[in-house]
Image 1 (cartoon, rainbow, N blue to C red):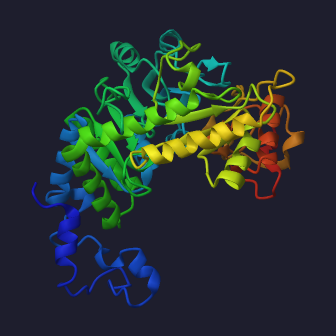
Image 2 (cartoon, one colour):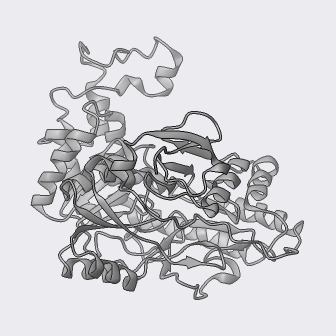
Length: 477
């Protein structure tokens, strides 16, 4: 495939009269923002540019090339983020009423798929690492125990790597699931860069997962909302295509499609150089992190190479900075980074801050982060008391999700909901993982977690209640 999608857009758009959507008609003199947003090459699905949901031309060639680069059998371009891939993947391999074994720390899109398809979830809670107070790796033993307890389940759904970069033993987990006849879907949204360099862990495609969903935009040089789905067999690929045509937009942005194609080509042509530069940048940060006395960085500094409790492996692209040994919280560290160092972190928790790196980082950007942390660290004191763990809590399910989300409900202040059955999903962003979902019992730990998130001005999304500080609970349960 010699010609890229971007090259075709740049060649064709200036000479073709657009008597079709979109309404700006590629007239970038109409408004300044249109020029900034590259509207001069923004088209719809027209002759010569292929159709995403019935690809047979340049888009199919681009997706075939993508599969080759990522080592997959079949790959799909996604322009509605990983979310559309997860919704489509789950519907592709389940029927209404099926059981699905899933990690409890899955993204909220997985929970939406449960409700849409009336599935029965069997939750597996990941292990925890108390040194950093984060969710750790999935235990192969706990997965096997759950499979044996719920032999009606048809699917295993797990997230790897996690937001903090923790990985699990995917090869063993997938092999185990396949022996029991389960289809395996891996949410690898945070791992599109994995498997291309020995500096980073291997990926879910090479581990044998049936469907793998990746967000290109999270770590690789592609526009926000671009993602990929990799599928292992022709039959699954056919069904995946059918489901994508249901959940994904019928007006895909060719700017986003061109971004995906260009990103794949960049990796294919310059993989070794790009990943070597990224690794060099992270090693520059490691040298800085060695000087930290109070802050700790997961997998970096003095923790480099240490065996961490319940952690199978780590993705070094994630920089999780723990404040547990200091006299400040993660929220306070984030404010210092913003206000005094012009640095915006990715995620903030009571126990630390996550700084995400990407292929676009350089030695200079990573040294700047390291220098900022060293300066902050010098002004810190050791924690005067042991900080109480404040992690996403475990909750108990009482009513099926699909039943609870359609049942009569009332709204109560979060503080007053202990013992009530939830009627809505409550998600804290970041990381976008549900704290409670419909049908689960609200407990004191969940209440405390939500109150702390609200105090820190994290975004709390609710699916039913519309009064700030209130949540929906079942009226009769």
